[in-house]
Image 1 (cartoon, helix red, strand yellow):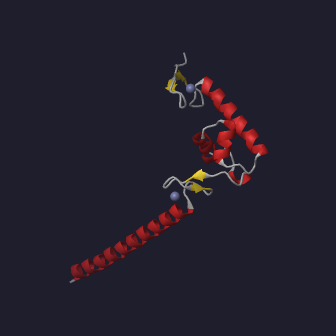
Image 2 (tube, helix red, strand yellow):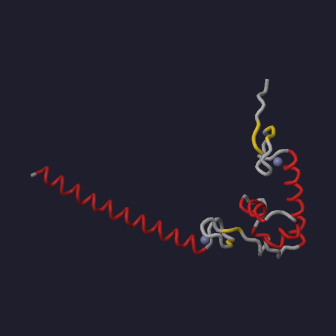
Length: 136
Ligand SMILES: [Zn+2]
Ligand SMILES: [Zn+2]
């Protein structure tokens, strides 16, 4: 006998029987309709921004961004759609971080690697000295 699995719907919080999606049947239908509406809108308005699309279709901005994030909507097809930076919230069109944050992150990582390298060099030096002492 199959065990009945239930979960809370990601959109309305209602308990429902688990399917492949994290949505109850009603929300899944709304979700599909929203996507269709947005898809149709964008097809006719390739230069729309996320805000304009949200206003015209009634689809929440957060939802549109989620579709952009999981590549259901391709940014390359729509020049004015943007995702937002995970760190500072400013608009970005290349991944999860804006140019400023990804630069800063790259810089931080480089700094960290350089420090690690220095630390390793210091330890190496230390080990050589220790070996020298043992030999004596
Ligand atoms: Zn629901
Ligand atoms: Zn940023």
